[in-house]
Length: 281
Image 1 (cartoon, rainbow, N blue to C red):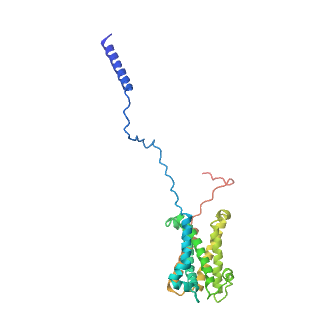
Image 2 (cartoon, rainbow, N blue to C red):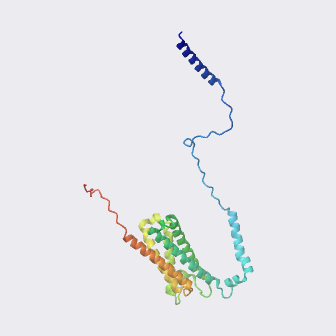
Image 3 (tube, rainbow, N blue to C red):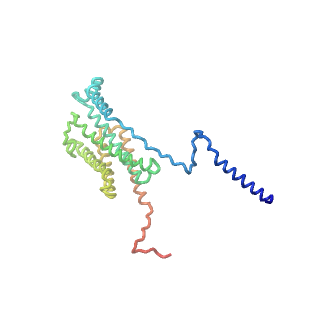
């Protein structure tokens, strides 16, 4: 055997011996370190949804019992003026509650109108955002309806006004010098109830019905505006006049902006139908 062949055979035998030795060597002991997979192989972490935190019914019941006790016994004994104002010979608390809730209901109606006009004119994209504007529009409308009902029904406790339930619920049945303006407020309350209900039946009435009902919102705001200005006790005060000027002016401005913005909007070309083929170039 020549020397080159012998050297090649020796190299092959040495390589085979190294492979056999490596196969016979046991693996090193585990060190406890975690082998991290590459980012492309590692499974994505799944975030568990937050667990809703609920209030136990026992806590709510206890809070209701404590609130009823304070309203019935503790507060009248600690504050005799409240007891006299509610159950005295000339109770005034009912009248003050009616006046204050009327202003809150009007402010909420104003907020609902502003948010609705900002959505239709696309101004809500700048602030506060479409979803936030819609939530404020809906919730302010429903809260305004609630405060309006409270404003009317709380007058049943006022002995000076001496309203009956029929006079409060039936429009123009209250009598007196402000019969017309009070009746307009009563009509607006029923219309607010219809518009508020439309939020829950929107899929049933369709888009066209939804738009028609929301046009009534302008009528509601006008009725409530004149009801407050003409029959409100606080109309002569400077702050109430400022509220009416600010609310009425802002709604008028946003309405005009909405109208002119829709008139100046470019009309998109109509899509060709099957009977109207595209013109050849």
